[in-house]
Length: 70
Image (tube, rainbow, N blue to C red; front, side, top):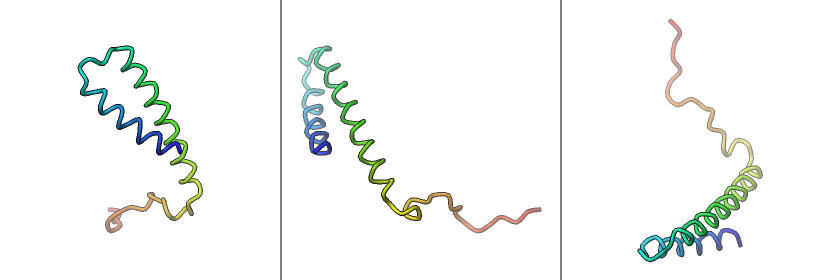
């Protein structure tokens, strides 16, 4: 539900940002709703990421061949 609401809000934001008649109050309200939505999406991503096996998101591996010590 939160992801669907975020998508709708992004569509509304795109429309409002091209409307030169949008007031500062309207844009501040939009920014507040976008921030709320982003917090929700972040919470969802963290929750889903926490359920992944650790090896699925292990990014600590070095790329390339090992370097010799001189």
